[in-house]
Amino acid sequence: MKPDVQPKKIVVLSGSGLSAESGLPTFRDSNGLWNEYSWHEVASPEGWETRPDAVLAFYNERRLKAWHALSNSAHAAIASLETAFDVVVITQNVDELHERAGSSNVIHLHGQLAYARSTSNNPKRYRIDDAPILLGQLCEDGTQLRPDIVWFGEETQHMEEARLHMATAAKVLVVGTSLTVHPAASLVKASRGRAEKALVSLEMERIPYGFKFLRGNATSIIPSLVKEWLTRSGAGSNNSFKADASGAA
Ligand code: APR
Image (tube, rainbow, N blue to C red):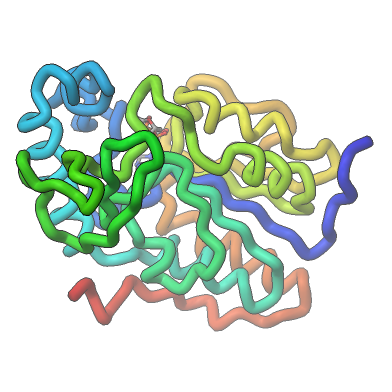
């Protein structure tokens, strides 16, 4: 028995392409991180075992960059949907640009750069903002601190919750993801046939069934799509979505 679709519910599934216009790198584009680094060396449990210093350096650099990045008009437009809809943002991104733009319900499938966790079996989680994690830095249970990031081969977080949200959404917006990493990518299969589904990206190898592909930059496409959705819902939109003027701390 499938759960009921909630008419006012919008689910957004985002990837690194949404933060690209905020100056943060994607992974598989020509200038993506996995063209510069080996994911196996810096984003896997084996890499952590072999060269923890290289893993820490990789995430320390990304944490600082993400901390100083500004949310963009696509983040702002997504946040503005909350004026008329029940919005759940499911993100593969480890930055906090959705939150900075004002989204209040964000599920991070792959962890967050601004947090560290212990390496014990029942990990404790610590907010560290933009601080580096150093080798030898132990948490209260005496284990080495590590980035609170889901590495390749580790269990993606909040998948059941994310799947249920996707299955009850009346509108689904997928933005800035190549949909190549599972199980996150499989979430699109949980969207309902009757839901309105849009996919925004620069290019896609395969467009999931039922999705309308809107090719282009997120900041060019998302604000007008959001304006259309808000207007159709009867909530006028101030249709000018600004990047985060306040900036990071
Ligand atoms: N506007 C819209 N889409 C964009 C933009 C932009 N300005 N720039 C890039 N894109 C699109 C690309 O066309 C591509 O489809 O964003 C997508 C980025 O794909 P990836 O680099 O594969 O990033 P992502 O899908 O987020 O990767 C998923 O892989 O390595 C893991 O954990 C990592 O969460 C990440 C996961």
